[in-house]
Image 1: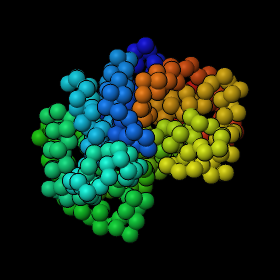
Image 2 (image 1 turned 90 degrees about the horizontal axis):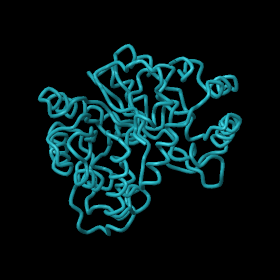
Image 3 (image 1 turned 180 degrees about the vertical axis):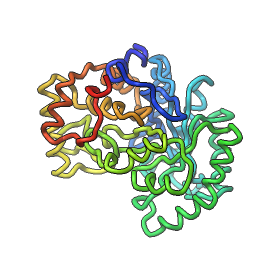
Image 4 (image 1 turned 30 degrees about the horizontal axis):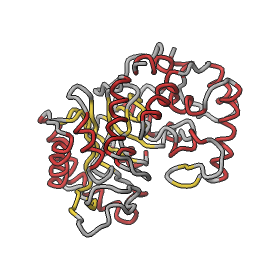
Length: 346
């Protein structure tokens, strides 16, 4: 099955996306092959990438932070020149020979012997980008994203990090885009609020928003996504399963937003599951396809760590979802009143 076959159900009749960014609707999130939460061998990572390529996936998202260079290095060894790649800046990798590489650090296990250090300065962004190109074995990338700005990540340092970025790193990203080394620039974050603020500060092509426009969460529709539409800014949706709960469903140990799901979240997921079950649709299929109905969303990038997950993502993307499912979700108050669905896009 090709990716064109896989996304046919979710993209049938969909108008061409606005803006400068042209990405496949289904991409490959490469944090997992950087050993996020569990070790993946070099051979297993290569098998997963090869399975994605064989299936027709042609867009891969990575970052220096993913395995501290490991994800980028593995993609660089495997990807042909004709696929599209996004990577990120905002951290430099400091050699750390003193650490135990097998230990979990920042969620990554058995990763490369480096320690990430935040640096959103002009020189820091340029150094990070140059190192990424070396690991990726490329002379350009289609998308470059400033990684993990925002209050949740930086707490009381948030304002200082923003000043550092807009006074330095943002200018470096503009220069890279102007030179042709980068096709598009933006932020890759878990908070729509920092993206909303960034619209007041600079000229961005795209935001990669992880976990904040999903079947479970749609508050970005109140203000942020309408502003993106007005500015012709594209959206890449990461974390379409909200860290797993929209795949795992209601069960002990289900994960939401990188931690255990709360009772409130599980109650909402239970209601989503019930509607999907009534329409013989896997919850994960509805979750994967839902964001693509929004006119600003150009791609959804679930994480994949083995060939079975590649095949499963393709199957979910290909599942034909009846219009009545979306109607019932809206009637149950589980969709934002302004959330586009396949019903409106046909």
